[in-house]
Length: 231
Image (cartoon, rainbow, N blue to C red; front, side, top):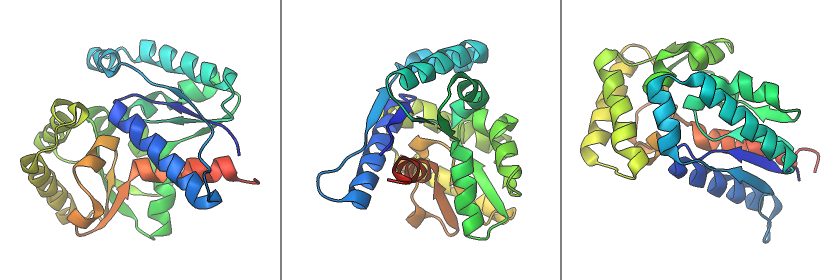
């Protein structure tokens, strides 16, 4: 089993989900009392959120790249970035390490392609929906990607930062999200990507009428498969 480095804590709700899913996945594959070999770097999310809000992406990239290198030095044999939004800096992180970096959008695209879908909706933070880093990665796999219109993007983003990352889950916000998803389905979305870990706390596959792609679970499953490959 290879050791997985988790670069997370953005927010800590995300980190906990990654650790839980990866450990459950290893136990399911190996049985008994097995669990994953992990090294973890978790952050005070207030520090990261301030960088995001100020557009200080270079500083954030320096921080994440340096810490990814520290995970490698601590024994990580592959690195998983436990956040969709900060994949905006994936190239910086990958360039800083000599071990495998598992890109979240690649794991998500593989699941969509396996279902033989062509057009998907992407929900996430404003940065994920509006910057090209995530959409272009999915489009590079031949997928069409739809994002919500302006007012809906604001709603989706605000619920993440004002509620979900603070552990607040409201029925009213879930209903609003489902309305946003309904409008994207009307525009042609065959599936919905929950492109933010915290969205998975609010909306589940049972809530939507189309295929649902919980990126945290997909990424965690890819990490388990990579860690155990050849083992």
